[in-house]
Image (cartoon, rainbow, N blue to C red):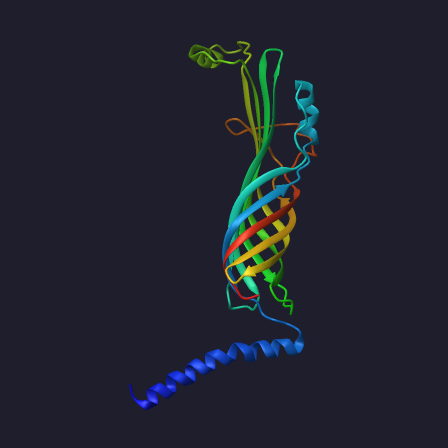
Length: 250
């Protein structure tokens, strides 16, 4: 290798070694440090929909009230796009359910409420000189659904009864299964903090509010449900935690 080539390589190495320090010093002068990172992770998420209208009805079935918070589990990640300082794009998805079940007068009765969504995340990380912390504001743009499953049945179900229920119009049946669903688009403002434990792992805490743009409910094979209480919608606060793996420079 010629001497000029060696000098060029050494110069390039020195440049890339000192340039991050120079940039950091420039940011330090104004108290700000730009963020960078890429990650994927697991997100436990708690949502708090208003289930009062459902609980008013299931209490008449002899069941206990559904929990006021629904635990869901999902995952997601993000990457800083570099074209705009501190702006990162990513995605998230989560889902879960809560249910109550009891034997009442010889019948197994159960009501299950499920909630889930997925979407694109857009976040801006606030420049700060606090090392290992990244405070971000942003939003989730996506779609999701809430679902209510209602069951009443005996301990067993003969094959013939399955078909007799629909072949003989108007026949009374003791076996009931209803599925109600609200599908929606959402825009959910978020606020999160990521705490870098190492260069390759970070903890996340945050939350936001899920605004939904469809209040209609459908039943079974997509028929309209009329007279749904106005309080039963899929808007809700949520809290998320998470463990992220990737590369972090904050």
